[in-house]
Length: 304
Image 1: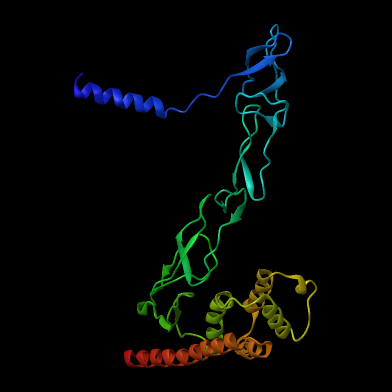
Image 2: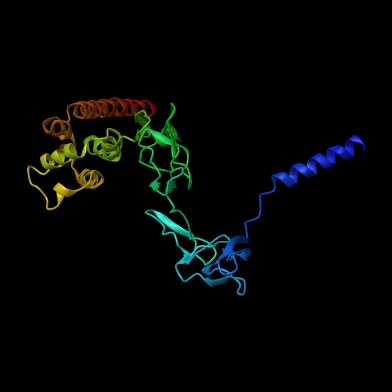
């Protein structure tokens, strides 16, 4: 036998060994009446065993009733109950007599390995962007935003994006450089400075509170201070995100004077570190606005 023929024979034999064995379709049973060993047929997928074979009668099987199944040749006396999709799962394939119901995680969720539980995809907080979006079997992977990029929201999709450039040709000046959690702030210096500063702050204050991850109890205390001690119905039971929404609603209509008082409110509520950081932010805005706009005015005089 040539070496090439021998190699081919070895490959074929290996393939035969690797092939999975077929499901057993018969089984042996002792017939008590004749005291002989009988070879009986099993029941095919989609059915269950009603009665075993005898010397004079074949195996009797019956179809699985609705809500049950068998996937293999079997000798069981009742079909298996169809699987029920769990929390945060959606049906992928309906249960049939010969196959179990198949489930998969709902959109926005992933399944833990070897478990029947689906968890929501994690969101990347401000200052971090999505490196890999979550799938049905893997959670979201986040990464800190690199220099020159930012992400300003909790998101399971948003990547870090580049800071905007303040176009001098359009009369824009940079009021604040971008950080990892907010974009560069540009200003045009063509209106009331206090009001202009308030408008720019209004754009970053909601994400400021999200970025600093203020606790639920502290958020409730801050809102209590903002409302001058008045408690709204249902506020005590609001989640952290619900309290944040109420704070954002107030920020969207707050006057420049009210925004100036916000650091003092945070300090009075016990948010000392966050209050000091916000005070520094406001001082930087005020100082930079004055400097940038005075420089713009000087440049305009020179042009004139």
